[in-house]
Length: 263
Length: 315
Image 1 (cartoon, chains in turn brown, red):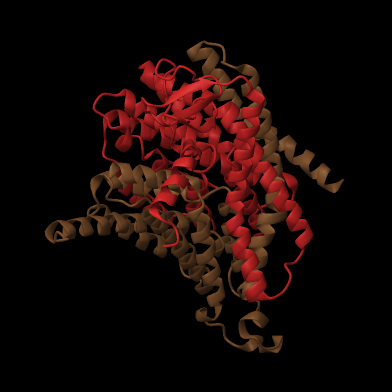
Image 2: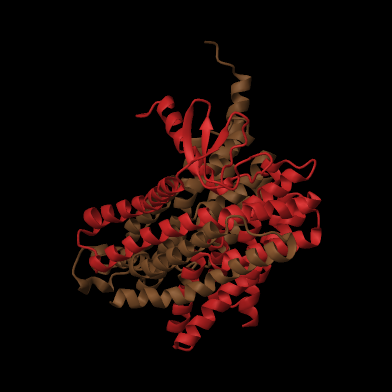
């Protein structure tokens, strides 16, 4: 019963969320293109599915993805878990290296989520075509996955040490800017886009919850100031790893050209 | 290597139509006669996949499409495909968490029953959502994007680009989730009144700002494709702007601002916006869709940072 009430409540707000899309599509179709919408019933049915789906997803998010992300952060940073002794050892100073399970978890989540993401595969196939086969599809997927994994890990490190988010991001930007000049030109748009596509609807809330959970359970961190930023890392680092991969692929090609194999 | 090249290739070919979903090339009804029907994509000799109208991204002469008698059956196939893909999104995450819980934490997950219910809801929700998008929204959105790209009126093209970016962002599930979470944090820190209205106001404000930013980004990106500006100067310029503004923005907005760049570009926005970009680049002479069609997403993840930082300064 509780669940049904919750679903109905969210359904109400979801109607408002998708209303702008309906307005835009109808408005432009009738006022500018001036044609009837083809297959109107199917369009309408699709819209109803979208509304229902969004409702279920948002309720499920609150019940599953957010609590899971937070619970993982809390469990892995629990003083008893970290030090393995009784809670009286709270006096022990926490060193950032004590939280190695957090880093491993962040790395694993980032890599595994990217490897199954269809949008990433689509980008990899595109990159393979654009580069004339120099970019290997599987290789690029791993490059993006490692980028996201390392990004989230570094982001967790920042939350744990309480570093300034902007310096990390500035540093990453500088690397991106410098690499842009050394990356094959046709790979640049693909590299930039790879950051955006690698974060799916499922991973974003989970990663955000992980960050907020870390910031609330590590002493001295504020969730509002330190808790956000993990997603920014997850978007930036694949750009770097894809560009690195493109440069390595070109170097490899040149090296192959200079040293043709004799078999 | 446990898998041979042949196996990987077979799997890729079999799955490829599914993966083209996000990067599809919209086609004219003239080129693709069965645009507005369910159809089968055929490679010579064998049926590869069943897809919704307008979502076929394979421009190949040797592929023919055929409309089928039973849309219900096709609908069911499309639905189960959508179910599989949402399961595939979740499984690695469940696996990693399960592994950590069992091997590292060595304790049962707190509130496991409620989490299970939630996971089921997430799978149902994502399935219905993606299925509905592919059935109703993407075909019409793509054909409209293409129509506007061909229409030749820059004013209407820009208006449509802005409206498309704005509307799709408002409904983006990841953004709704993050905005709600940000409101929750703001309540806990005491910057926002602890009422339902206070929360809703904060999160809606954030979403409107991000939606404005994405709309602007798409307009900028379309302008770039029309004028042929090089992408990286604009992006680098944007980065410099983000950095400069960070020093003036309140620190509690910086994290949210940076994150909002990543959340805008997921389920709804990417396919429609890419359709617009690729459609546009392919209808302008001298533009390469593979090169110029991309980059809209990069803009869409840059401008929200700038806009949210400004929002934080004004607030």
